[in-house]
Picture 1: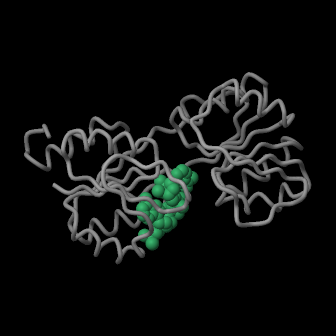
Picture 2: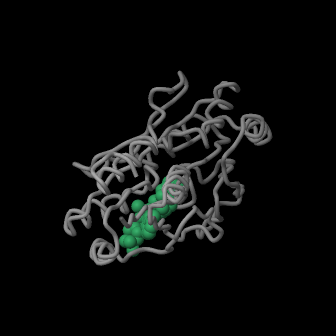
Length: 249
Ligand code: NAP
């Protein structure tokens, strides 16, 4: 049983640990966006597959696929759905629940990054952006002239306006540090994706404690028809079922 695990998330690393411990032949795939990625247990391959056709060809080496990529990694998830369907490989999506049920009274939802930027511009003059490096360009028009603090894992390739400060850091984060970050910047609005999970939740708690509005970018739509679970345990059961039909690895 050879499992391809599309990763780049904490859940994918947790799943890889469990699969390796259970003796499953798992290969985690990373996009290669980060120069110093946190590596999971087991085999790792790094870099794109070359679209749907490239992934479909790569699937000759695997019996099943788990898509545990980030909720905003929509291209990879769509490619996985198409390639697995074309190659006849079972696919399961592992996705952490979003934060909608934990939304605070000062949350403002946005459907796109552009909308989030416009909302942030209306709500404050000292925004903290925690939306990643790849989408920063969408915030330039609306927030060009305000004092932005952007926190990213790796420095962006685009130039940013002189009033912006870009810092690099990587979660998990804790509440005291998040409070200090928002206070030091004198933040008046926070922008985040609906990433879900605990790793980056403390910034939402910090914003709530400081009475700051938060702009939250809604998750993009998922490919239809892909079975989805929210925890590692059901993935283990799914793989065991595929492997032996017993539900045990
Ligand atoms: P994306 O926009 O959905 O994917 C763009 C392309 O990157 C894909 O078509 C694929 O290239 C390649 N790719 C993406 N994930 C890959 C993986 N796990 N293994 C191999 N190739 C991959 O992806 P993204 O949003 O840039 O995210 C890239 C990675 O960062 C993912 O692993 C994701 O889990 C992680 N991540 C993303 C975010 C986020 O907010 N987007 C946050 C945290 C972590 P080919 O077409 O050439 O195969």
